[in-house]
Length: 248
Ligand code: 6GU
Image (cartoon, rainbow, N blue to C red):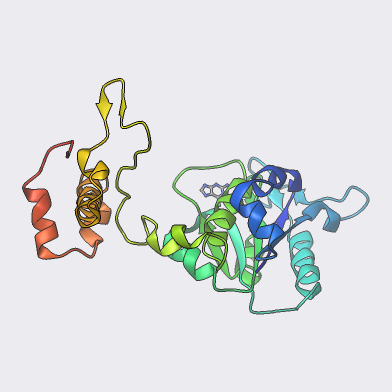
């Protein structure tokens, strides 16, 4: 997959993509992430990328021409796949989730536009972007952090990025349930003990305990997910019998 990111602040992207799993995916040629400085398509001697809003009001608006021309130039660089989604990161977009991440992971190419300032000329939305995505109901100073979140969540879905033991199908939010509690050595720390069942070596019992913990935890913390989860009648009954805040 190739991901092109149009931004006024390309340096913001160096840290997050230079570490850990995303770095490994890049090094293994599973994904290439190319940032483009929108100012390179800025207008005139001052490489202008923003301007005063028609009708007045506070703040500046990102201009149409640099963004259109940047996207057109980028599309012709390497495999001019015109079906690549052009995604505008904006708090007005549809709210990102695990399903959207999995859907986007099916494309060979994504083009991301990071909005900034008070806004972006409406004609970008109407005539250039094919999708608009927000990462949640709060306002960021720009779309860059949102683009990083999106890229991270999408890249995890690409074949070969996660080891076979950590496949994206097993993720909480893919299964619709939160994950069960995890422990590692030592078996007791300051008197706090790891649940006995995990030390038992009984794999069937461990699997049952984990499933139960996932269900109870989802019920308590995320009733919205619990409602939608794919559970047996018996599993639903489980929570009715254990309406407490700790399950051991
Ligand atoms: Cl995509 N952009 C900005 N500026 N704020 C946001 C967002 C995006 N998603 C949530 N808040």
